[in-house]
Amino acid sequence: MRGNKIKKYPLLLICCLPFFLFACGHNEEETKNYYGIIGNGNYMDYEYTVIKEQNTNSWKINYKGKPTILKQTVSNRDHLIRFRNSVNDGKILLIN
Image (cartoon, rainbow, N blue to C red):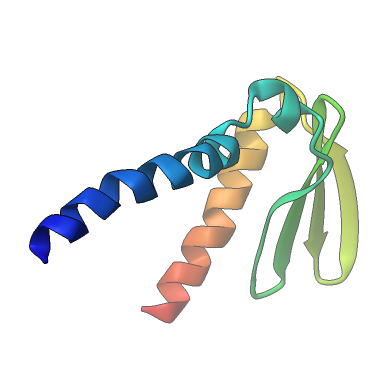
């Protein structure tokens, strides 16, 4: 009986392989065309949402109910990432 199980696994693998390849087969062109929220977080009065639009990211930063929208550029990218990390780290510290 064990021999039958071993023979079934390769057949199962062959049948499922196309589905795995299709699911994992996203190329860079498909991900470039994605529009929508790609990240968000909040901690106390600080909140951010990162929105992908065409070839750029927009950041909606909210502090005490006062939203600001910024386009991510080369010059402000590091500051926005530090803000995001600070908000996320604050939430982790609050939990611990």
